[in-house]
Structures are given as structure tokens and as C-alpha cells.
Image (cartoon, rainbow, N blue to C red; front, side, top):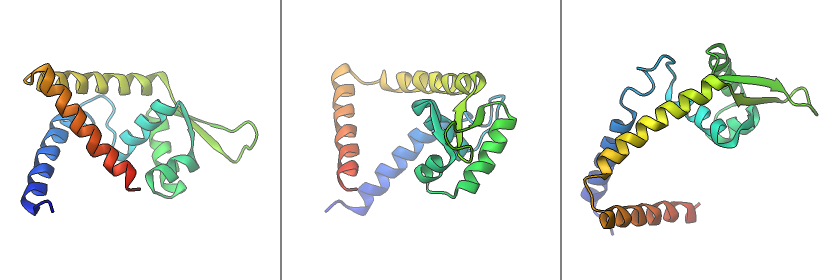
Length: 144
């Protein structure tokens, strides 16, 4: 059995890394977005288009919540919503060029920060770390 102290240490380190990566990313850019809005933007960036219903299901919130977020993101010029060709009641969300640029800018800063941190490890240590993280992520995927 894993000790509580070990779990507490792990969470402390994980939160510290996450905090460092996120520091200022969502509030110090020209476009201020919440964390949930950021997650929505990144998801749409990865899949290219998504419906309001799919986004609500993905993030475990009501479609009305996603619609409200989408309203703000659309007013900021980060996303566009269009009616589905086959069913006008369904709204399809995609990123604008401005939304894509925001994602790419923030992710390039994250990549730089991660590169700086990982450069403290040898290539072998980096490989070992990635293997351990992959095992941990797989164990969560297997337990669904």
C-alpha cells in the first residue's frame, strides 16, 4: 500500500510543476480566459470542430454552460459557431485564426518551460521519466 505521505509529496510536486507551466498564461496574455475556457479551446484545437453537446459531455457540464462560455469566447474572437448543415439546432464550434494563435503561443511557452526544466536531466533520465509517466497514465486509463 502506498503511504499517504508519498501521495501528498507527489501531489505537491505535480501541483508545483503545473503551477509553473500555467503561471500567467491565461491572465497575462491579451485574451484572458478561464481554465475551463482554456480546456475547451485546447480540445477544439485538437479535434478541429466539436458540437456544444459534445463539449458539454466531454467536460461534464450542461450544454447551457458551454453555450455561455462559447458566447464569451466568440465575442473575444477566439471561436466561431455555425449551425450544423444537417440539423440547424446543432451548433458546431471551431477556432478562429486568433484562437489558434493563442493556443500555439501558450503551448510554445509551455514547451520552452518544459524544455528548460527537463534539460536538468540526462537523456536517459528523461526517457525514464517519460516511461514512468506513461505507466502512470496507462494505469488510470485501464481503471476506467
